[in-house]
Image: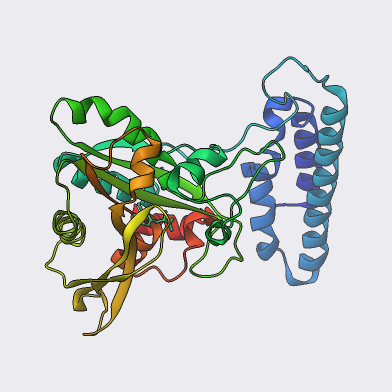
Length: 336
Ligand code: DAH
């Protein structure tokens, strides 16, 4: 039978252990402590309450002592201002790498990139900091034009922009591709990555999300080729035949501008006639080609751009876009 004397003995032992930093943190989880807790129920009925209180008292004393040590440590350790980390911060408890998994958006983005690279598109990561010219000017948005307001753009005081769309890469892609056109080839590239918008957040709006943009230029590019390319992409991504349609849409950088829709397939919870808008697209506006030094009399192009998050939400039936950036393990583990 465990006795009151043993409580005192354990107390002495554990207080001694707490003097050494290495054995300090586990003190409450030691077998001796567990044994005392376990012994409460074996005490004779008339003594059980008193014994339980004594064990609990010991626990409180240990906790108090531990936090005393913790406070001491915090004040004692000097701060090394030249260290690249805070020497006073406790080591973070990292997930074991075997338990870590790719974020679903990263994995799906890789899927998207693979499909397009197999079709012959070069893949370029989109910038996360850009300027007004690439975000707007080069895309045929006139200064002070109301179309700029549709993009809820963040801006630093110096005028830098965390881009609100991956179209911010178009001018660079076009300029870099001129040599290919002159050699008789095409420009075929996608730009993918994070984009940012200052929006009111809800189940379908996040301040940070992912987009993929496509650009194709040749001597005779046309809308038929664009629709074929997009159909192939969506059928490959969802692994089934799809019904598609377009409707007019306005974007200053394309003429004509279109919205591209797919009929939500039954396998993904859709009913016939349920159309989902997946992206914006169109023939690249002659001004956009000119701005990159490409002669619109000689070359034509098409472009498209749309959200990755929404693509993935449809694939897996995810109902709230905010899950992606939430860092919630319960959500992430579903994709492990
Ligand atoms: N950048 C547009 C957006 O974020 C999407 C878009 C529409 C991209 C039409 C395009 C396009 O390349 O042709 O809303």
